[in-house]
Length: 143
Image (cartoon, rainbow, N blue to C red; front, side):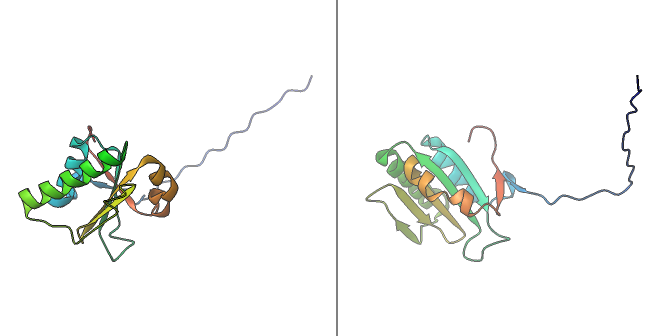
């Protein structure tokens, strides 16, 4: 019988490859963005995602994307974000779109935009796929 020999490849290197940071820490966010995320969480929004667009877009710095179970919850999330940002930080939305139909409410605060979706609309528009080159914000536990 023939004996088989095993060969292994060994490669030694002293070079290190630097991998670019793909997430933005929550602590690096402005207070307005943090408060908007907290308000959404407190109103039981789910699938909460924040995208850092600063390196790839000039029209805004962050997207906040959240989902609500139905139109009433989508509106409640929108109302809470609006009210608390006005009350606590004197920040008012530049533009609000989609409130009456409540499939997709957009709250534009200039430096960041909040997208509040019903599940079906979120799946259809799939903003996370469209903006996949953006860094994700690393949200703390509980979001």
